[in-house]
Image 1 (tube, one colour):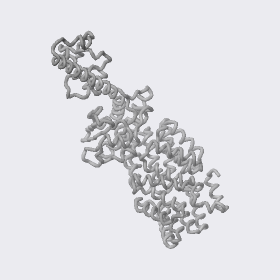
Image 2: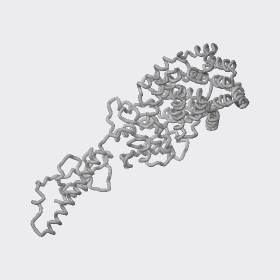
Image 3: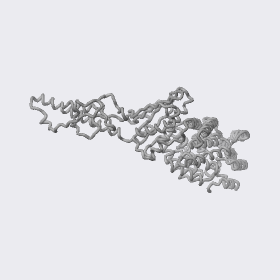
Image 4: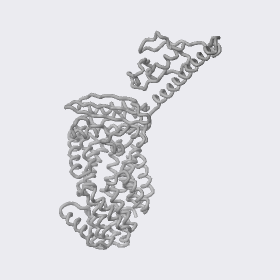
Length: 572
């Protein structure tokens, strides 16, 4: 009898397919990868006994012993003998209880749905930096696919890519990102062959839940992405509706070469500098040439042209027109694509100054994907610049909740607080960004602007200088520096900055709004207004800040400023 009870404790069974294993070194089912549990995976009485005749791999035969009291089972005899038997019985009961406890614990762990996951940046093990786009792109594509599932919280790209190139323990990553599971991946490309190694890890215990190797041809890369998304969702035990299954299976192109070109474009556009953005645009255009119905490639193209205008500081008359045309084409091809509506909305905001149309597109994007941090922060930008500060901060807060480690989102939230007149709160928010990355120039630039409003000009100059030194050539921090120098009474230094901007404008596009701001800091309002008029003529996107930038407050009573303000069409 005792031998039968011990065999229950040592056997393991899959809670899903019920396959029985007698090899104690196995932890996962060879059929479906589920975590094996001790004892039978059924609600049977603990008195069930497995007979020795059960064959390996087959369901064991169970018999049931009659229930006797302890006194009835213990034979009469010397006290020492009875004590020995009692000790054995107690040990058996204890072991059985521990076995059953472990069984129920592991059964609960193995069947419980995982509701949050972080897809860590896949490692490029090819040994070729030119393939980095592939590991990054497959990571991002999987994040985007899994994010479509309503019952699964997936950490955004900006949060997980902070770990790129770092060897971090899954439990530590899980704790820092507040997720239940971590998905790691390794990518190897050799010629036309592609191998992907995936490992799904329980972030609480550090145990592997599931692992799989995928060996495919590069020509299968599009279908591979859908297959991986489906497999991962199954292992997470996410309950999929028919609509969810369709979302996971959706591929925006059937052309593997076009898909790779899109991934290359995405890789380069995220590197922000003007040459990288121009490279990205070229890849997007090549992808579209191969598949003119590729909606996501049009979204990428729109993003690239918009980035050239705002980050690359190129003439908006051409770049934003191209961006708008690409975004409109993406919406035409796929009206359910949230990214397309979000891009179109923010481009209409920057270029057309049509606030109602822009807001309509932003709301449509959020309707399609309410968990998009990018959609929330772009809508917040529109709300802030049109003076709807409370709504803007609500949207920015939601964006930060969805993507708490996103530096750009945090910095923009600081800017929105500044423009809402909450200067101290803005500085506090920006300081939190410095704790994440003290070299993020965007946050230092906004901090410089905030310190100007407090009259702390030395701090403003220091922050603007820090932004200038870390911005890789953007002229935007130079403008804040020039204005701060002027307000600090350092006229000669401020005029040197102004001369630098004016001279540069003769060779290439420089935002008229920026030059106007430095003139205004120096007290030269005639030239400031003249440059603002140029901003109207060239449709400088930064003219959308006229309503909320406090540095213009002492010019608002000037009728000339009022006329310019009316031409932008901002609400009064």
